[in-house]
Image (tube, rainbow, N blue to C red):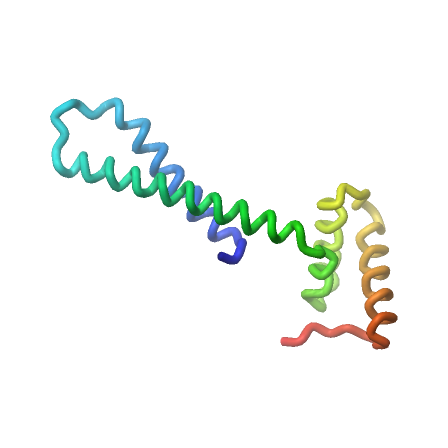
Length: 126
C-alpha cells in the first residue's frame, strides 16, 4: 500500500464506524433483530479491517522513514516543493530547519550528487 492521505482517511472512517457501533451497542436490548445483529457483525469485521489497515500503515510509514529521505528533495523541479522536502528531512532528523537551512541542505545534496555523477544539472524525468 502506498502511504497517502486517502489511505489514512479511509482508516479513520472505519474507526469512526466501529466507534459508533460500540457506543450504540449498550442501547440494544436482548431481543436483537436480524438487522441489528448483522450490523454488529459487520462492525466486528470493520474492526478487524481497522486493525489490519493500521498495521499496514504503520509498517509502511516506518519503512518510509528508514529510507534515505534526502532523495525526497530530488523528486520535483519545483523550488517550493524541493524546499518543503528539505525542511521535512531536517525535521525528521531533529535538525534545525528554519531560515536558510533547507536551502543549504538542497545545495549540499545537489553538489554532492553532481560531483559523484559528474553532471552539471539534475532534471526530473516525466
